[in-house]
Image (cartoon, rainbow, N blue to C red; front, side, top):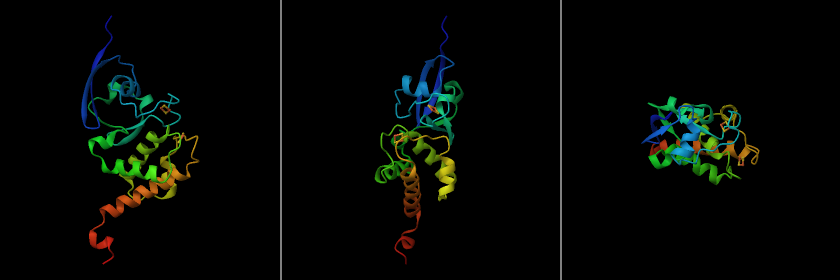
Length: 170
Ligand code: FES
Ligand code: FES
């Protein structure tokens, strides 16, 4: 019996059409069908945050989300800068410059969580950053550099957004 169903997914501004089994998760389809392997799989059961993507701007665990339910929605992954997201690109730069990446396995999920946070709060407090990272596990960094990277990204984006006169203090 053919149990494949057609899906049409909008990922980072690109339309992907595929035939999948209806119970496959968005994480499986991103990685195995669309070859978008930037989104990581670790626990596979909603505990670690490694698989976090944005769906209509909201951070979700792709390992718990059926691909068929993502149809008609905008999906953003860590590959997002290719589709022209300067905020995501700045967060990635700040993670690199602040040393917030060691093994890197948690990093895509952390960066996507930061992207969702900065969309809601341009200048989040440290407590708000910590709250946004609940459910995101990192075995390497101790989280301090990750928090600093998000603060750095928020600061850089604010400077970029400021009028030139304000930036030169006149
Ligand atoms: S792989 Fe999805 S939360 Fe861990
Ligand atoms: S950098 Fe290794 S798990 Fe976070």
